[in-house]
Image (tube, rainbow, N blue to C red; front, side, top):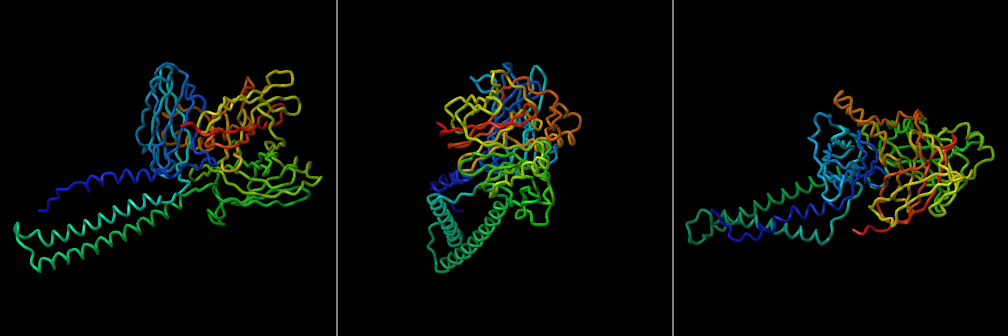
Length: 515
């Protein structure tokens, strides 16, 4: 029997899993909206008003941190359940309970493991004296970056691995040469030879194991890269063609990602397959929100309004019906000045929900044509990772509240773009997640769980269209959001009144989080 009296190496190896775990956390997850991974929701969960924040994990598998803030002062039971798009509801794990935060009334926190790459519906369930309610909030569980091994960490791991290999070979050599000798007996030449042979064989076996581990790691890396979403996804190509005096924007979506012959399957969001945003580069003084129609498996087209010439950035929001993943594809396109006949042609061919506007911000008050005044009431200082308080008030020239009409089933829409173009989000008063993906998970729960799941509120926005019969009674608007990173942002707020879509524009300088 071989005894090891020095346990320092054993103690050192206990820290290796922690070192590897720290390194794995350097990746960044989620690509639901470009550069804005966390998900925010505000509204009612059954009878309970609640603001929900889901901070996505950095790796997959990983833990999402979830906060639920409710103004209800009574004790509530809050739980979180991960519903994976590719797994039956009956096979979902048990719900994880949230803990009430001491000293913060109405605040509940918890964590939830997301084990697979793909789309999840996080079911938030609240139970209390007023009854029970649940809502499914869609999130994307993906990685968006792969960072290289830090040189210092790589050197430490290499040294530890070399020490382990040397130790294994020496232990086998000693075992082969000395284990069968009586205590204190000297080693003969045959014993030395037996030890060298065993050491050589063990070294060969260890080298084979290391080579196998290297090939396995490369296979895992290829699989990781296959699911990697580094920035906008999928690929998007855009061209402009002049047809009968009308500029039409032609799009090809996912030809590289899915192959040129593959038809891309999409869910409708607010009744539209795609939400397309065009923003003039540089000055950001022209903004358009358009809705292309499909002309082929991967091809879409939209009649352009009379936008002035220039280079434009394109941001295209979509949700895949095959996986419920939502994403933002991007491209750039150059527009020549619009022909004089394009105004009437675009009006006859455009979607009635298409809109565009020009202008630059002037502080926290935006004055629109017709005397409308839109006031943004931010709560400074604006800091990354903190509640941005996107609260707006809309008044007419006399200071009276303006009645709002539903715009694609919502009181308003908003878009946020960081100056360098690396952060873009399409927002609504209900949150920054895909309404189409939410409808996907609600339908999944109702279809697979049966009538017992009927206590989830009906929020099928993709089918609401303009059938929202009760317009907001106030012209105050609130949108939940946190700026993900510091920088200079531009914000466009869109709402409908007098059967016309209006667009207000604001700027925001966001500082670093103090944490």
